[in-house]
Amino acid sequence: MKVYHGIQEFVKLSNAVVTSGTFDGVHLGHQKILNRLKEVALQTGGETVVITFYPHPRSITSPDNSIVKLLSTLDEKIELLTENGIQHLLIIPFTRAFSELSSEDFIQQVLVETIGTKTLVIGYDHRFGKNREGSFEYLKEHSSRYGFSVEEIHRQDIEHVTISSSNIRKALMEGEVSKADHFLGRNYSLSGVVVKGKQLGRTIGFPTANIQVREVAKLIPLDGVYAVKIDYRDEVFDGMLNIGNRPTVDGTYQTIEVNIFDFNKEVYGESLKVEFIERVRSEKKFTSLDELKHQISLDQQTIRAILKG
Image (tube, rainbow, N blue to C red):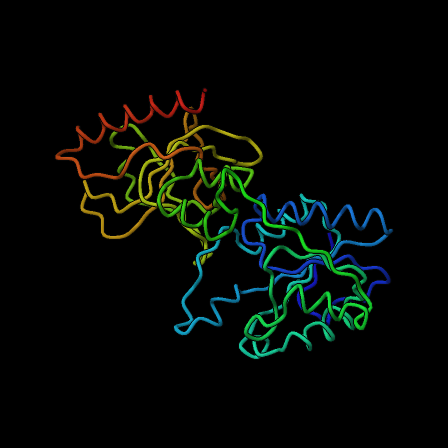
């Protein structure tokens, strides 16, 4: 997949089959759009193009400029779109000035002049341009003037719950990782570098790798203990992960610590990818380290059974 960081890098195509959106998480709903994009490109001899934006538009347009917690970092999104077989990815820097671009200007400057769009495939209720004024109906009405056809993917539900990045974020923030995984079509994951912590786990027989997630916008699931899979140097291990403030030892800030089963390598400074399988329990304060150790032992038994099954 060719990646372009801005419209100035893009070389106009003769038959571009295009879609546009934030594609946060590249979930099952997004994948339906991408699959249709590839079908149209195959039928017409075209090339697939995804337009996305960075940072997330809501982090720029919201009144307080609050950071939107994301299901996928930019690097993860690039990897996921590559896996989905997309040929061209145009990443447009989303600025306050760009947010003021009208739908007409977006169509003319980006879709027509920069990309050379011949077919535009969009998801249901997708809108673009200043104040989200551009709609499917508007595009259909004016498509002949722009020189491209427009196709809308209809609403897709799973078990009567609309697939959306917002619903997946909500599930993760409530600790419902199995539900989030179902909507994503894969296990939710995060990656980070292993940094030195207080090494308390070693003293009670459960050494942990303290993971530092560099991307501040990456969504961290609800505090608690999770059954996880760990990808280390292309090998996959079972493990248990704790997200929280470690109240038993009077912790004052959130940490992400993973105990990798049947593993004894030194991994400080290395990268780990963690996939969330199931939330086992909430974090709690124990009266002693012995009580904590006993509970962790029970957690490990529970999690080994979950991952084995």
